[in-house]
Amino acid sequence: MNELKGPLKGIRILDLTRLLPGPLATQYLADLGAEVIKIEDADHPDYVRFFPPQIKDQSIHYLTLNRSKKSLSFKLGSEEGKAIFYDLVAQSDIVIEGFRPGWTDNMGFDFKTLKQINPAIIYVSLTGYGQTGPLSKKAGHDLNYIGYSGVLALGGKDKKIIMPGVQIADIMGGSYNTVIACLSAVIARYQTKTGQFIDVSMTDGAMQMTSLPLGEFLNASTKYQAGNFMLSGGLANYYVYECKDGKYIALGALEPKFWMGFCQMINRPEWINRAIPTMENVKALKQDLGELFLSRTREEWTTLGEQFDVCLSPVLEMDEIEHHPNTVARQMIVEHEHPAYGKVKGVYQPLKFSDSKLHKGWAAPLLGEHSQDVLISLGYTEEKIRSLIDNGILKV
Image (cartoon, rainbow, N blue to C red; front, side, top):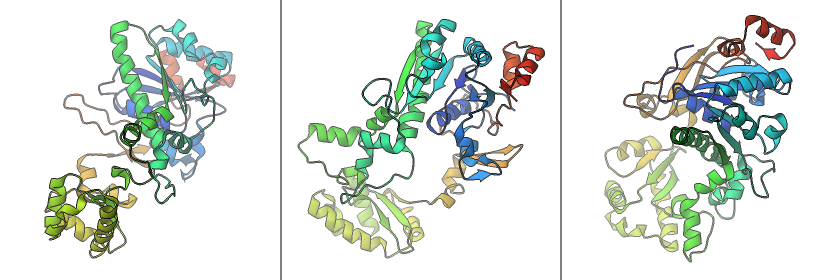
């Protein structure tokens, strides 16, 4: 395990989250240098560990969401387990949990209790619908959250809803907003010297992504229709087209200068005024552009587009992303050697700092891999640790 480096070095985070939204957030924070201790119940660990596909007996999803973290596993509901958690809280900066409202109160892990132990503790609660409102205790997943927020409807066409390719509310509404919440609260603590509770709702976060279309609907007299918002299918010059080889190309010639350049590129100067977004124009232009793009392969269009400043790009497939020159140049794929599962690759954090040097990190930990090390750092004696292990409280 290499030394932690980065702008968040010195920040200790206790991670009680599971599945995707929370673990991705804490992995991001770990990449930036925070000490993240992933806490899992010894009998009921993060069940993403068991999801397919797997490398040997471990989920690839777990391995790609939990790098550069320490694993501490004990029986959360036991009195000894609660004591361990409280000792950790006393020496930590942030607690992040993703349970439905009320669960942590029953366990004694709620903000009110933890603040008595450490007045400076920052407590981030990541839930589907937030701590208040009629949906607060309702079960849900990404698909439900983007349904309530309007994001799912925006992806429709001809009254048909299109399933998104990624978990939008989980990641943008949950993971990223959790990171923002942590960083904002740390900055506020420099001024107030005290911690606070942050209520992060994935539905609220997803709704923020509808700012443009929902703002248009709320403030204009235009009638809403799925697929007609300018940036989600309502323009012919901002659209995705199939090419001769069955692959796809993305045309983003939104501004007049890019559309004019594109018309020059395809030798269609008479098309310059066709991008005016009326229903008739859009339908006819989409049809003509569709036929045009079918005349060449995606690679041919990409090569031609590189000679012009027109916002034309290939729609890369999963097996093309890793080795694309831009992905390589930006160092967006990270690889670690796992002691049990071999080489594991994942997507790296996207920020590039001029001065703060980041650490290389390490592969996702085995369950309880760092239990003894963490307790030793809290001042536990070897005898005490051995007793916890022998009594089935601590997993190593």
